[in-house]
Length: 439
Ligand SMILES: Cc1ncc(COP(=O)(O)O)c(C=O)c1O
Image (tube, rainbow, N blue to C red; front, side, top):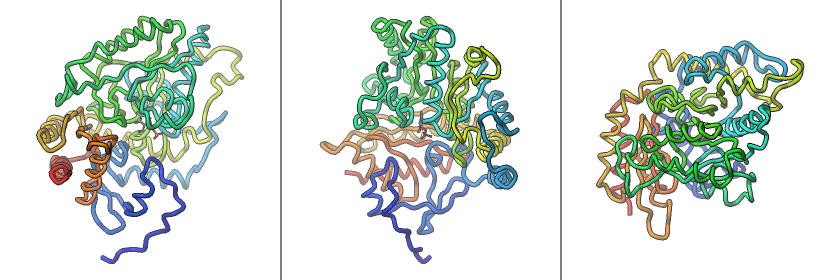
């Protein structure tokens, strides 16, 4: 096959990318179908990460493609302020139908980052609407990732994402992270040790007083910081402490939503219901940007006071509930239901865990972690060159025709939920081969 001419790569400043390395050695994707991308050299690349934790139903699903095409021709845009269109209401109802108990109000955004900002603003405004406007403090967690906008960065806990950007939001504090490789290395599923780390919230309550704290936001499973699985009982304990002190609990389910952990949402997998929940990514199978915040009825109702011609919540985006996104979302939920994908990770996780944990003992591997169809492999960093080992593994897998993700010196897998055992085998084999030739 002849190599097509590449576009000029100069103008595009790429996000979260080593731009200079990329432009010297580009990785350009031109098509996608099912479990595979095709690159501009015509190579098939097995997708080990559902694009970016979002293409849960696999690529190029005909029902979703058709829905987007038809929607563009029928209603390309509808203003979302003081106006609506039917699919926005339909999608909100359908989401409420699969959400954890009582989370039946849906506010649409365009990304995970916007969902986080929206949830934080709802939390602050909720307390104020109830006459507890002094609850302004937001609590995140070390190693948390909540997107890249100022609120999300502030409650987030990844140093590289924070250190360049000044003082961030005032009045934010952080729980300790739950990663404990000494006690929990190579745990299969939920680690046994660390539920007591939720008590760190009591420390912050003692420091700041509960009456100043609006909300705690955590990812049920931290993805971007390196696949950190919560210790057994940790999320339950966090819920209890929040309840005791009138603090809202926000689950950021941007990556755990839509079947990743074996049920529709991690809240259901863990049996812990938050007050607010952020989603994005798998909501439209990654086909059209969209996010949402799901809220408990009582939170929504606290806003519904005053004269009924007045706007209750001064927040929203031009593209909230965009018709193309709603059409994609509805078709995505149909596809998940038809193919049983929201629970497929539960069926595959035993096999996935077994194969993934077989990487224990391979060069440089210091931990393997898993839950549902999320896998993490932590490498010891090369002396003086943190992150390089993982990045070289990523490049080697790419050469082998397998797409994985890395963060720090951690490799992450989050395959589309349509994966078959042989796909999982191939992803893990590629990592094994790469590790064996890595310095
Ligand atoms: C838990 C979590 N929250 C928020 C985000 C941000 O989402 P987006 O990149 O769509 O803004 C991500 C993205 O990976 C995420 O993993």
